[in-house]
Length: 383
Image 1: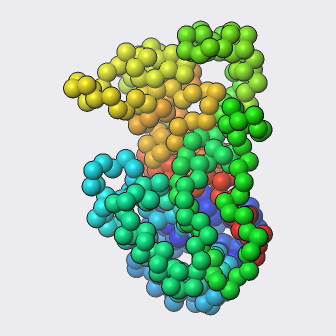
Image 2: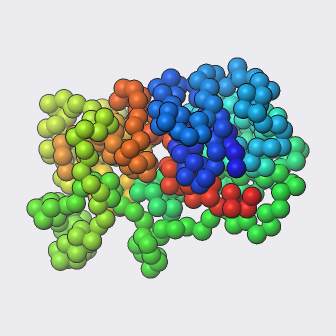
């Protein structure tokens, strides 16, 4: 099976496809640091090397690309892609993002659908794509795809935590399948593989703990004192049992090139010292300037990630504690880039290139490898 990955980023979708036995024959990515990450992990030393185009997708001649990789219309099995989503982001308020030129990239994706005529296409984007203010872009894309011979089997939100990813991450996925492809018994999206602790089902959602090393007895007692005793109804013994049962990861190798974090200022370190385990910014006594007029938002910034729950969404600011609950569970600094990548289920062997800011952008924008693998596997089995 063959696939092409548009807006490939650091390669989360491509890595997932490769793990499903799909030959990713080409990828397009504008960002130079992300392209280098893709090249380092998915092109060099690969038996089947994707043709990586580092450049503006608007400047790519689709006919030339098809000739370059030796594929004709209707021969491609799967077209992947996550068009840049800043214009659709739910963080934008009021009318922001409505006329963002990056929104047009969704329709550029359609042009590849029209030319390549793949058997299937799978798109990932932020939940804001479904907002009414962006309806024109989405409706135009869906109408064009249907007019061009595709049935839209799914266009809705999935949460990565339901598929073994240790974070709450809501994203829109769109699956289109060409009308001549027989998929009567297709189940998409696949049934969840992980469940809420209150559901009575197992396995339960993977928790933050699986990204970090095993809790020591001293840390367990500190968690009980800082969080479980004052903020939950669990007895100390129940909390102790819960914490001891949590899954855990291995310490990050000191030789891992992604084992680094943003260096906090002395003031930030002091703030983190005052922040209890599982604690938030307000627990540390820190007040933001924007709260001077009674504003109640941005509650998660400078907070510690919650050890016994899936983490908050890993974003492009995951290297910066001022952007969310991106403070280490018990140390007084932010996530390392390896920890952030683990939240996105990248293997430790996957090396990201560029500065801290560039790596965080790549990691935060990526399709979680495990979610991508489950989705691609479910549709590829029908081909």
